[in-house]
Amino acid sequence: DIQMTQSPSSLSASVGDRVTITCRASQSISRSLNWYQQKPGKAPKFLIYAASTLQSGLPSRFSGSGSGTDFTLTISSLQPEDFASYYCQQSYSSPPTFGQGTKVEIK
Amino acid sequence: EVQLLESGGGLVQSGGSLRLSCAASAFTFSNYVMNWVRQAPGKGLEWVSSISSSGDFTFYADSVKGRFSISRDNSKNTLFLLMNSLRGEDTAVYYCAKGFCDGGTCSWYLFDYWGQGTLVTVSS
Image (cartoon, rainbow over all chains, first blue to last red; front, top):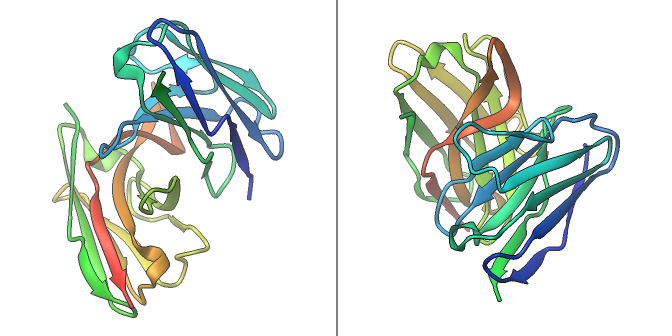
């Protein structure tokens, strides 16, 4: 199975900050990397697919980049509604696997 | 708006069985891969199973293979997960998730809409 490792596991940031979360795959997954946002007690929300394509209707402050084994999710200017956990997930091969999550908290 | 509504969760003894259902609406259910993804309390996300749009093809995580069975009824827009021989480590919120299609290309293992989840608790 492909292991997905996110860093950091948690971070504290202020509204307006630029936030970057990294995700590393244990082997190359080309650009088959997706990002989800999850708020406490809620279902995950689909943010980005194919490493950098923003899901329709989502704010452009979210962006993704990377290929191969190293990927990043960037929030250019953190908003109050962005405080949540973020998960990367590879869809390159079965079984699909998720990172352990990154919790973005209010500083 | 796409809606996925899970039901069937609850408290069950170790070794017991449960059947989860997911009622889908506001999209052409029969055109999409459907999936189950679970989340143990305080933990991350774990893919459980996927089924093709026709129901002809199914895939399972090793952790549930031989114990869980995914199926669908396209005439009723409903997805199922039959869970047998339940263990403590199966305790989780189980989410139904719709497969993603980008234009005419549909992906396995990409989840664009999720239900609110149903909690399964396995007691020993």
